[in-house]
Length: 316
Image (cartoon, rainbow, N blue to C red; front, side, top):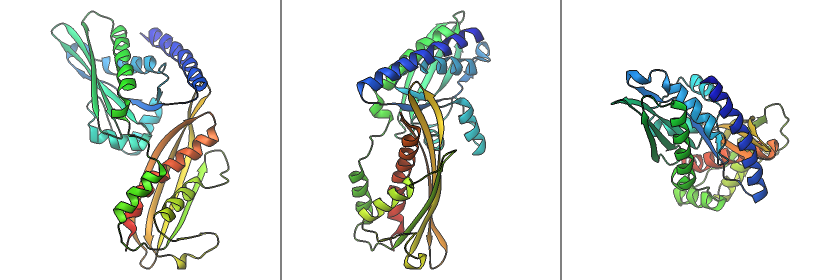
């Protein structure tokens, strides 16, 4: 079994690199960060099959150029830090929370079921942005090799994600759409004066220009807020201080493509009372040819998502 998994992983890496190269030549990418969790075991005849099934599924799907699989160690590390534990029984609401923590747009969970001398493999495909749940399954005899059944399931899962990605992954919003949503939420309410100060770093590299701070400032100004320059002005000129910190770090490489994960945490403070009005956080993953560009883009996207949720809460 270990030999089979090793061969699948090697083949997957080679095929994945070829797929990414082909996508690069085509001039565009539609890559979905995806996390696979251990499958739930149901029945005495499938004891120990849960982890095996998810391992082989990972090895099979790593070849898919449409998917960027989140490393299992990274998943476990994040869940441990947040004191969470998930298996094949993860709910859509939990998927949304986990997706925001690890930057995955798609979660794959499922079950291995022993029933009537047969084995059923059932996969649940959950969109972390839409909460949409899709399913695929395969059936085999109890004597069938689990690896072959999982490979069959992987083909179905990959095809489903490719065909129905629009149901799983939210449409990327244009800047003007975010601004329109903020203005609609604010209405005619008076906008307070803001001072935005967000420190950021790309692990191992010096950050020259703050992408997150720039994005929040831009969206605030476009939404009718007056924003004080944190370098030229004084915090006393502002009604609300928007402070935070963000970092981006290398996640993984597949062929010529680099994925970078960014995490941003922001809070809004009433300067007169020092009361925290609102807090928010966001994790995003971006894939690009350049690690630096991916890091900036990931922080910018995280800032845009936070700004859309946070700014409507700051009106007087």
